[in-house]
Amino acid sequence: MKPVPESITVNTGDQHQVAPLIDQFMVETVEAVKEVTKTHIGDFKIESGEVSDGPNHISNDRVTYPGFRNQVIALVMETHTGLNHVRYDFFRDLKGLR
Image (cartoon, rainbow, N blue to C red; front, side):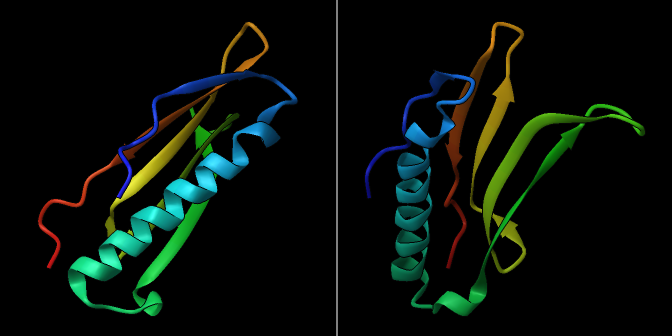
C-alpha cells in the first residue's frame, strides 16, 4: 500500500484535479483492509458530508471516509480557506483490524 498522500491545496474551482488522488487513496485503503481481514466489499461503506460549525450553519467543508464494520479507517478532509483555496488532508489508521 502506498503511503498516505501529503496534504494538497488547489484554487477553488480546481478540485477536479484532486479527485483521482482521492479515489486512488480510497481504493488502496479498502483493498489493504480486504487483504488484511480476508473480507469482501459488502463490509465497507464510503460516507461523505458537510461539516457544520454550529446548529444553523453548514460550511463548505467536507469530510469523506471509508468505514469498515462501523469503524472509520481513513478520511479526507476538504477545507475552504479565506484565500480562495481548497485544502485536502488525508488520514489513515488500520491499527487493530483483524
